[in-house]
Length: 290
Length: 312
Image (tube, rainbow over all chains, first blue to last red; front, side, top):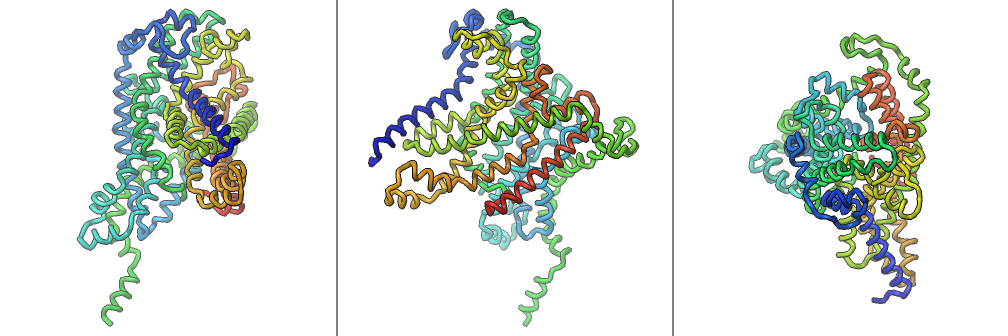
């Protein structure tokens, strides 16, 4: 401990300052959880700061009885699970062949794929494309239409390239086909990277609202985020229509929204510790190079 | 003799033989390529709607060509100046205020000695990145609600008037940038933290022997070590200057705040998806994509020259 006095003072201030930042980051979460668990009396008085007051679960009772909420939950899980599976499969099938230096045409395909990170047709042509293919209001459209993230593809390709060639050669001498080499050597070797990419895909799927909102019109296909989006927009328009000070009355509605927000976050909060283990490594897997 | 002849033969395999021996790889690649063809490149073919008077019922081929009419209509529209200005302003403010935050955070975290405390702070600050846009927008909307939002409760306790922030154009950019920092600063710091851990410890040892304190070490070793990463991320940001996160703006803006909140992509959304004006909206979208691409390309070329490294 040969730190000077000035360094120690700085260290202490730095520690306190970072704690303050962490607190500011976490506070919104704590607040909405507290409000969602409080009785409407205290919520209406605007007198909740850190802990729930008049603890009760009525907002949650209300929400689980709301029509369509279970369907929305089911749909969100459906898109997350099948979407992630399809995404991972397609990403592996793309990354493995394109990581083989000997493959003819590899360069041009790589360039064409990476180019899409910087130039895309944009929202309207993409929407018309779905429409023309009859993929409006289709679960398959959601699952396949957004399957590959170029960024994740590059991460995995870079990882596959770092696997020593000797492994592939040895397997080939033993008579293994390319497909077997991929499935039985490369995939098992890259479980940590696949976990990282899978978690990225899962988070993206669970959290997405924009394209499901545009493409899905049928009530029994929309995911939770789209339902929540409607509630948030309704809240805004309710605020617009109300004069100052008069939105008190409807505030129980808001703890309803808060509890939906909590429910929409729970799967991510559960996944978070797993994600955290992997994502720092994952991001560092490869520098993003074309 | 025989062996060397064989070698010679394999060296001169024809392209066809190469493709044949790697047939399995090409078959594997097929689903992946189909995805890019159907969902990424096929829409690019649809970009010609920007040059046609596109009619859904006639289809693309039957819709008449109109040359640059759609673009003329866009550039003459009274809204064009507004959306371009808003897009550039929001991006510029992000570069000014959001961009330095993760760097500062990484530098501060670098000074923490206890690894446990460091990873605790990291865990907390990364979390918001994993929360959905809708939930974040919901938090912002309800926290800023005119009379029961926590911000206004605090304001009135301090003796100020309550303000309905989300209906006031002058507050929109501040709100948008602030929530962006809250959600993104922690996560964006990862890349800098990684770069910091890559700096050679021997440099610090040498500096200590020469009598440099922490501050001088930061100035002369840490910052120069971080510079390539900073430049690279800066370039990515400049390249994306036209791509403001419309998903969140759509949830936070309202007609009263369009004046400062409406950006190119949100305008495309309203024209294209809500009003079904495909020609015009495709034209703006194409303008955005092309100019955006030029930005990225130029930024990258510059970075290769200055920094000796770029994105590709």
